[in-house]
Length: 277
Image (cartoon, rainbow, N blue to C red; front, side, top):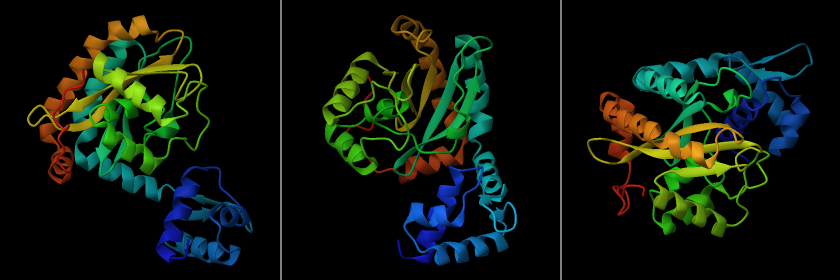
C-alpha cells in the first residue's frame, strides 16, 4: 500500500469498522504502513473534519461527516422513499427482520432494514448497513448468485473470497462446491436459504429483486431471524409474502434514478433475465 489516496481510503474504511477509535500504532500495523505516514494522514483527515482525536495523544475515530455524506446521497437516490414502506409492511407481516440489498457496480450492498420482531429473540444487524454483502455465506448473496451462470458465480466468489472477514456460523460454506450446491438449490426453490451460516443461530431466506420493466436484477430482499423461528416450514409460508414485496419493489424502482443508472451501466449476460426457480 503505497499511494496516498489508497492509504487514506484504507484508513477511513478501517475506522469505519471501529467506531470506538483506534491508536495510530494499531492503524499503522493493521494497514502495514509506517506509523509516521499513518499519523500524517490522520492529521490531514482531521483538518478536513473526517476524523477526530478523542483526546490529546489518544485514539482517532471517524466523525459523522462521512456518514452524513453517505446518508444524504442515499436519501437523494430515492431508494428509501420507494422501498421503506414495503420493507416495513413485510416486517410487520412476518414479525421478523427484513433487509434490502442493492447492486452497486460489482457489489451487493445492504441499504434498507425493517425490524418486525416485537418480543423474544431478535436479530439486529444495525452495524451492517452500507457494507458489502458476503456472497458465499448469506442468503442475500446466494440469491444474487442464483441469477448467474456457474462461471459467473466462480468469478464473483473468486473476487470477493470464500471466507468472510467476520465470524460466521458453523454451516458457512467451506468449499466452492458447497456454494454451487446452495446456489443450484436456490434456483430450483425460487429463493435462497441460509441457516447457521451467516451467523450462528440465524436463519434467513432471500430472493432477487428484478426490474418489472426489463427483468434485470437490481437487488435482493431477505427475511431473517432466529433459526428456531425461521424454520424451513416457516420460510415456505413466508415465500408468497417475500415474492409479492420483491415484485412491488421491482415495479417501484422505475421511479429511482439510482436503479435506472445501475441498469444502464450493468453489463448484460446471458443469464440476466433468467427467473430464479
